[in-house]
Image 1 (cartoon, rainbow, N blue to C red):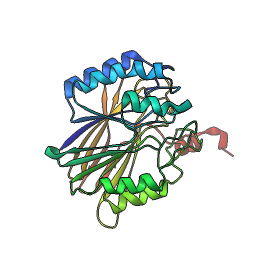
Image 2: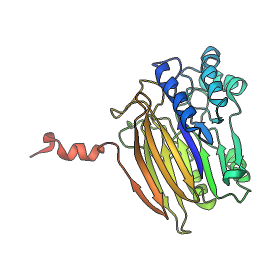
Image 3: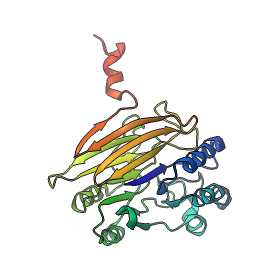
Length: 273
């Protein structure tokens, strides 16, 4: 079993909450996962001083366990990708956990000063070459969402070539795709004809007040083992943990953390005749 903590959308430089990050570091110390993955927007404006400040927290995580980060659209503002790679790490990376029979690959969906994401043919080709190892648990991490999320607003900021990545997850039997960007924790699971399943998991903002859907700042605690998956949403303020998703033998139970938009509409008196 591989144990992952996913943090995302830290937004150092705008509504950043140091207390939340301190709580996350305490939680990581207590649980000691195999890996912490940050799915983008570590900083808010892509400025070098923001990266220099946030990396002090990141280094404390690295003192405990492995760490991987992918760039978000805020990280690459005003050529911020240069500072991301200089201070945080490469824009894309691969981590093999031989002892856990797991492979995690991070890719860059962000483009300079653009809100929407794109992978592109070159990176898609590179991504395919990373999964040349026959490891059981396969994970991809990126910033932008591949499927729109309910209760996150309707701004068009998905990945432009999302269809190619969705097809990729089928062809390469990817177990889990980690994303951030819209600050709403959510999950979808697609079961493919080859009897494999892919869960698309989104994280809320972990250390900022830039929340949506009336959620608290949060992060995800993930347990993945040979296709079986458990995901917990952890409140960054009080560290309370709630089950979001359980997938066993290709059967998924999704615990919705909030009402959907359609449920609110159907319950509204505005539409009554």
